[in-house]
Image (tube, rainbow, N blue to C red; front, side):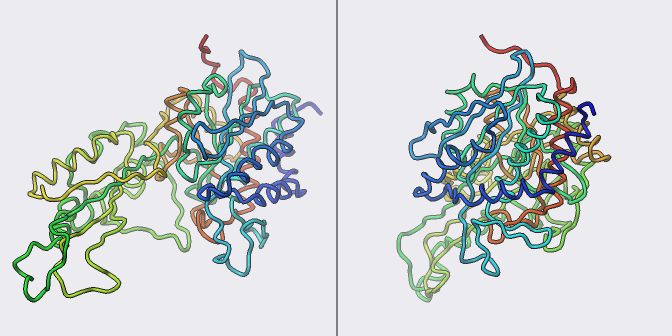
Length: 471
């Protein structure tokens, strides 16, 4: 029979059904790539140099493992397959690092560095974040190559090992190796999707800014009986300052923190989202946050602010004394419609205007936060990928203009000038970053078919034309 789209999808499904995918996943998960732990640097290198390359051997990729520009940070694997320089290039992103294994905290003696299959749940650190997901992309590429003998586009496999600690050195790496990483589109498989029954693609991320609000009246504490009622109380002052930032039901009051305008295509995409209520996942309060705004708009198109911590005195052993110091750490999540660099200055003006000049703002160095990013929902690459997903799944995918969390999309958008598309194959209850992280086998299998369909379609004229390369 002649090569066909259906044949490529069937090959991807067979890889999953006959156990090849699971065997490969076990090999990836077995490497303890905890990027928060400096002593794991040899494991990060082993993942790039010894674990992944055999899995793409015979697929026509030329692999390079390159040092991170930041000393002490994990390496980056860049593998390229060039079929024709005139064809478009797809950069396939993944990250080989994981969060801490937390082995003693896993249930029923499960080992985070081994895949434990229990029905439809496959437990193990990295099964969804992110080893199991970039493995889907690789095996789907293999299925298309086996069926058609070629991809029909150029592909660059890009696997970093520092995403869980904020991708240190990634910005400098992309500048240094811009020509090697040049692409027409960035496609990554990562994150949970909104439903277990509807495929999804995301187009960026909200950004995050963290800072401390500090009241520092005195270095010492004073007897509450002798000085209560006559000394400024740092705790109350800071509490009032916090209360000026949001209403009692969470509406943001700081001028400039909320988007002045949300683009219409973004509003349309958010309003079309289907969200599944799942056991164990909080639904949220309908009257917390921006009044009259839907839950999807509050999560994906608006700004949020939370108090991460608030300390005054000695919470574990209160003393009978007027406290002279209080501190709170806040985190603001925002879309590209609110520039990150304006958040702290706007807060400073707000506090001064409300009589809280004594409250100091100290910006926190939170390296796990990425800048806000968003690819236009009307971008031709977005439309091509969404069309392919609909063809495979027989239903239109959810399209998130940006995720609620963070990702390095901004770096690829700015440096490579490539639209960014994220295709998640997990679900919110996967315990990502916690003990008992797990994948749902049906979503992994569906992802194999979706990606085989996407790779097939992008190689048969469905992809936008390649953009001119720099000379």
